[in-house]
Length: 217
Image (cartoon, rainbow, N blue to C red; front, side, top):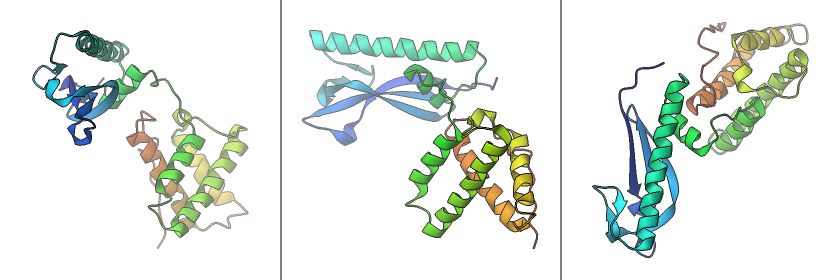
């Protein structure tokens, strides 16, 4: 397991979105200087928030309920850290947030990734670039159907061998009709999507680490 340098949990209010002099409470997890925020279910008057104690000021019933709730959130977040540590899993701010929310065991698929990528990038990339991505995605699913006898595959099951199989399929497709540089472009697009999944912590390891593709001039 990685060396954990810093870990903290704090509560704060979002004063950039004050409504009726109230702001929403957030929990912030910080691991090795990287943060993840969790929006909590309470809004509090700005002038009753104690930044030093990270709690609501007062002794009325509502204040006691909110502060007790924050204590429970802190305990659950710290327990999440202890669980990940005991399981020898990679501890990141996002991983702790996912464990707290109960979504860390979700397995994302290639279809999930492609849907997310296309929705996110359709307004950022030129339509011709997106058209090339659609083409690459068509070949990806062709490989999944041919080699795995399935309509989709979990990202956790994509390994170095999947990349090699993808390359071999492209090179042999229609008796080698796809040129080398075009093959490399398809693989490059797959790589960018897989990198996106890795950055979002949908997968623990990047299967492209050992892959060395060559383009011909």
